[in-house]
Length: 262
Image 1: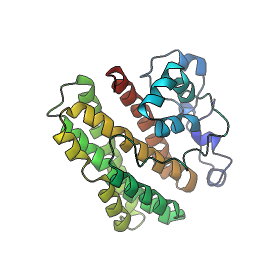
Image 2: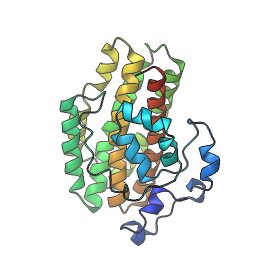
Image 3: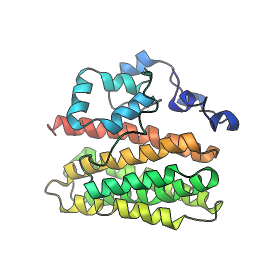
Image 4: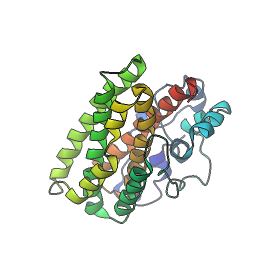
């Protein structure tokens, strides 16, 4: 089996750059992985897997889980024709994100998609930093009030992982002359209020998990676009890591909600 990056290799910029997925990241045994637990680390994601994470409602996801469709997609059994499914998806009405925030995020994505080359990389990094910062803020908001050990673990993991990536992206931006403030501020506006939503919720644990799903979804959208448009090997590696990690977490979040009938 092959990873999403391998599947897109036939398209520029991968053919030009020769950027390769590390051997340890490639799918080797779909059968072995399919027999593992749902929470197992993700080794490779197909376009179908990303489509599932970003398009299904809670009930659709629940039914797919019953048919084992999610796990099939997750562990590399690709379905033809879904590689381009991301572009047409509407995430503006997903649970946990207000309609205004969703529409603003949609406009952010449209602005990003128009860019190419170094301008794209600069905008992508500039937008992803405040996006990650929002996840950190949401995680810090839920920790003092959480009553669920799993949610606390997720929050701590998000803080650690995304702060590390924020530092990496700030370093990368130096080679582009710093942040694109217009794109960064646009992202801050679309992410506004998500941490407050967690603080004010009657059930902060549920609010955190429900809010983090569309948050991760938009990160996956942006990172998938970077895999298609960037020619910077470091940016490509970062984007691949974001897709893999956040799609895996989004799956765990949905399973957690389903176990609670949500």
